[in-house]
Length: 346
Length: 100
Image (cartoon, rainbow over all chains, first blue to last red; front, side, top):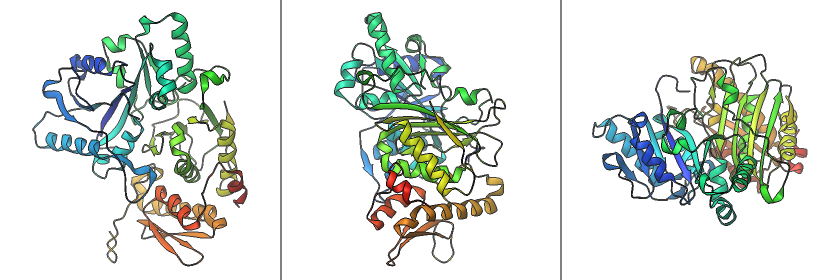
């Protein structure tokens, strides 16, 4: 665990074509709060990035020859990030506190995290930051129907912003919000003002905050709006559920189970995040993953109260809570040397 | 680094990230040994074994003597599937039934 060297977060602005990513980026760059940001974009837009335009990234997904599916990386992104660090080191560009990456509208942001965590250089300097996804209220339903990547963009979001909300009827907006609740009930929802006047809140509370106060531990898991009752039209094949684990968790056993699950079903585990009471450890451990990639888990200072129940949140494609619960419970019961926690799902 | 084979030490898999660097040596060795024990339980029905190699990687072996080296937990399952010829799916009731 890296407690002394501050790792630079790489925040990701994602969203389907026309959702307003460039507009948001323009606001971010105009804001004094984000003056010390380096920016990477996939494609040139009409936004004036002047000297802060530090690189252009082409889509380039490669599978490392070792064959580990956790190591799907985007080579061009990796090179662009390395170049950025080198130029900062050489004094060619000012020091920056964060990197903001705008993806193309058709990109799945999932592999960005693995690009950082799998790279032997980048992982010592950078960490995955906050995933912010913009959702176009006008075109959300059509985009979702025609492009599966839309769901992936929503599912990986730590924060969701609905754009063009003022251009649709209230009913349409309510329907969209219900749809977002089914796909990613744990994401924090930001209002339209986040687009016009972005504040520190925009990228706050990324997944790797060792400086969490105890009170932030559970809230980091997100608001968890109760998804509507099962409605196939709304839900499609996306499932989101929360597991509660009563009792200490055998971290080694959980890690083995989760790594097996991701090996076989990683592309259908759109998101997993959790706060865990690990055996023999007084401090909570936060766990966060997107598809095949689990970000380096970290300790948080302390539990907020006597309630030390572990929680795991899953967003999956066509994998339901019963299967996961049954699998984890059986696996821990049969494999671990220690008593298994009682697992409940909501 | 191992002086004999030149293997670089240290795991970078996420599952090793919460181990305490203050007591790195002993605690990590113990955690690694426990990890190997548990993986062996999982692989036993497939007649595949795993051994620690210089605390830097793992060696998977089949009953027929085929051996492959893998760097970390992320690579174990894919390689074990290749060697055993079967998927290792923790959501598969048959796989769960085969454990222990």
